[in-house]
Image (cartoon, one colour):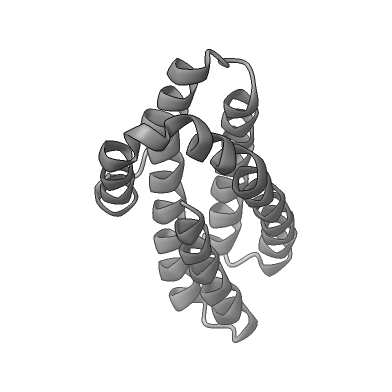
Length: 145
């Protein structure tokens, strides 16, 4: 899943580059790809990884709950940034994009340094089933609203 974070980050960077170049059509198209990838990532975690972790550890109000809350905030920021981008409002997009970037970086660090290692520890015996499902989900699921 950390690799998927990098893939989503790369899509976001491409949007930022398009905006900086004033290539609004490319920016909007790229943002749609970024949004879809982020939503697939969230859906994969929320439907597969988090429930497996919670069932195994009994921690339903711990790190997975925090990550779900951050997913809600990130979804809202993504929607706001996309709306500003589609309206051609560079100032509004810039503010949303800056906040989104900071939140994504903090969120990814928490997952990669805390939650994912905990998942590795507690779900090691489920890797053969869980990992292919996660890979398929981040690439094949329709974006979740």
